Image (cartoon, rainbow, N blue to C red; front, side, top):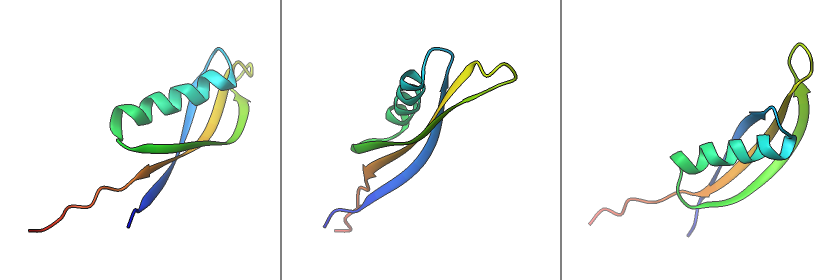
Length: 69
């Protein structure tokens, strides 16, 4: 039986909301294996001059089970 864990991340970029989502995924890929889905929850602008794009994403990945022999 498979178990999937979901985490939420916020990526940021000076380029676009798409790039902000890619930055969040890139960070997740450096730390997690078996990523199965990425959902963009919301996007927005932040910063004093509203010049920082943000993407709130949910990343789903398979949880590996350790079998005891």
